[in-house]
Image (tube, rainbow, N blue to C red):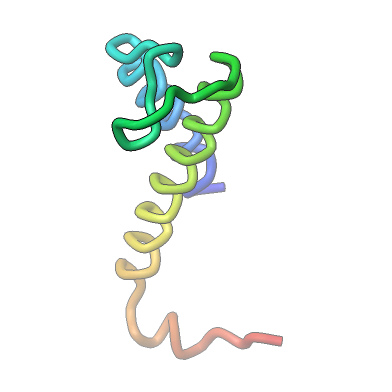
Length: 77
């Protein structure tokens, strides 16, 4: 939860920042055809992507902050 909850909150903030500047109805696939989905689908997918990226960064930071003895003392079953 030390990674999941803060990343959830920051994904919400990033979602608000991005979509205050970008209209989901005006998005195109790499300059090609327009995206033919509803705005709520675009919002949901973007939120999940933002959350995953921020959570991955937080998890990596959490793992890098541990000492070698903490990492080596773990038992994986």
